[in-house]
Amino acid sequence: MPAKPAKTASESIKHSRGRPRGSVKLIPDEKTIAQIKELSLIQCSQEQAAAVLGVHRNTFANFLCTYKKARLVWEMGRGAGDAGLLLARYKKAMAGNVPMLIWLGKIRLNQRDNLQIGGIPGAAPIGLEHSVDAGLTALLLAAKLENKKGSEEK
Image: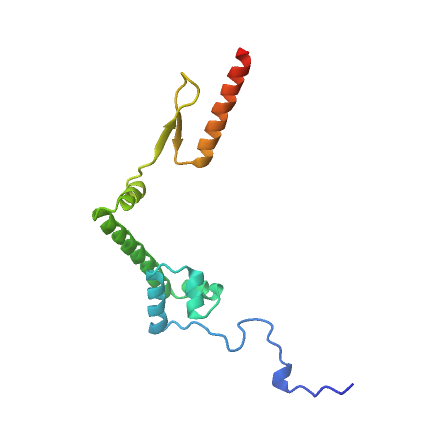
């Protein structure tokens, strides 16, 4: 078996902790701050923004915690993006888009879809509030009661 060549001093030093050599580190310069603003305006998640910036999501989260200006730009961009999205939806609704009118009514005016179905004859209707699970449960309960009532009459 041939002998292994001796390692140089720089090769023998192990880097088991910290950022890997050659990896990108975020620098709080104007270019990075501008990128963060644009990413937050288009509603990127922190994980997506980190990917665009070429860093791990934890690195990006730590960067936002460490640099107040970056955090403020991120938060303001998210808020401005939300407002822009709501404005676009509002404009569609005001142009007569019925689904958008319904959506805005539910979100902004707390409107709901209230459904009532019949249950046992003579009993009060079963009310449903936009919940499939609750509706199925109510239907099953009504059917169970109807079957129980029918078996008692026999």
